[in-house]
Amino acid sequence: MKGIAFFALTMVLVVGIGFAGAAQEASVDALIPGVLSLGFPGLGHFFIDEVDTGILHMGIVIGLWVGNSLVPRPINQFFWIAPLVWHLYSGYDAYATARDRNFRFGFVENGITVSYGF
Image 1 (tube, rainbow, N blue to C red):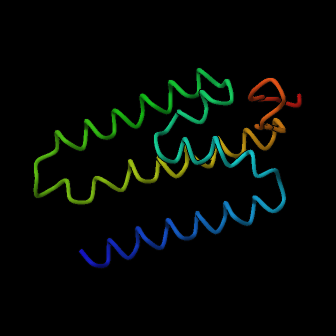
Image 2: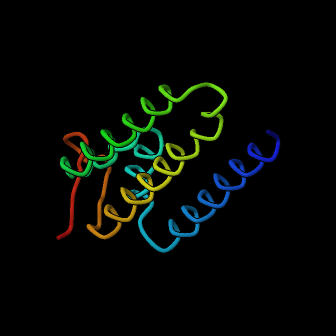
């Protein structure tokens, strides 16, 4: 069990370092959708107006978690890896899409602005 926890922690650190390195090249604003989708897949996609992708990512992660709960107890101890990998992929996908679209988020005189560069 300690090996699995170490593997999961290592994966999170590797992905975090990858996000940090990518943030130096691109806008830090693109990290916002990435972090949102890392927490709950699809949420960052909704934030950058990718509704279809957001619904797909949410459906897949819900299906993975429900499927995990239906597997008998002795067998499902390793089934949490698939949802974890999906969370990581969804976060990266939202970040990459926001970076490619030149996503900007910030405050202006009249309130908050969200802009895209196509």
